[in-house]
Amino acid sequence: AQSVTQLDSHVSVSEGTPVLLRCNYSSSYSPSLFWYVQHPNKGLQLLLKYTSAATLVKGINGFEAEFKKSETSFHLTKPSAHMSDAAEYFCVVSRNTGRRALTFGSGTRLQVQP
Amino acid sequence: DVKVTQSSRYLVKRTGEKVFLECVQDMDHENMFWYRQDPGLGLRLIYFSYDVKMKEKGDIPEGYSVSREKKERFSLILESASTNQTSMYLCASSSTSGQGRGIQYFGAGTRLSVL
Image 1: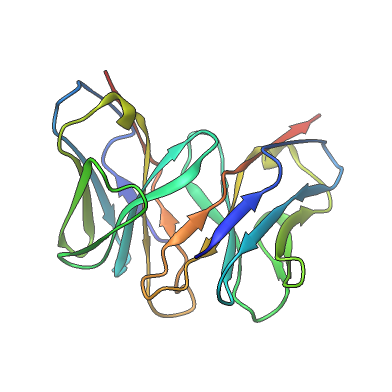
Image 2 (image 1 turned 60 degrees about the vertical axis):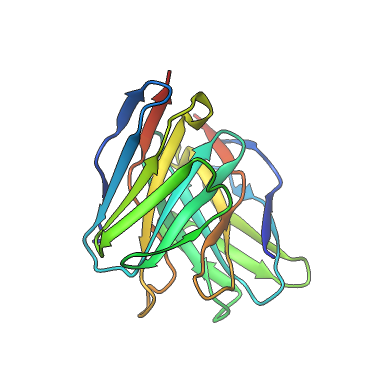
């Protein structure tokens, strides 16, 4: 069985400072991992995807995430926060069954202060 | 771009009503999904479909059913709506092949209130 734990329900940063959103996962097999973002009143948008090709994954809008198998972590980072990054972020693991449904973390709400 | 369209953004229904939520995707994806989103719980899978007329239960199927008569359309049905089904409902689709395999594309969501 797969599960995902997002370690912070809320993160607040100042504009221009680094962002770190933490995610730990458990999986019986080599997982596929994702980060999705949801802006207010919008659907979810894929930020990036890890599928074992490279441990450091670059996504859209300057975000990246590093897969660390020894720590079972997949933390999301960005060097410099922008006001438009304020949103809810979900760490997701793909179930390694034939149908590949997703298991979502509970989400981290990112606030960016001016 | 993949487009997943949910027929309603907001819906208000009464307890006991039969409710239909419709979802259409335009990318010929094989898989379609229905989730509900509640604060602090993330997204939870209700049902998914991997082919026309095929479906599988997700984590919280009780009180829901689904229909997939055509590949592009996936309907979620609340047989008898209850107040604890007040939530945001999100539809998604994904392909089983190509570079985008497994990536789910989401609609904007339907916020359902059951009074």
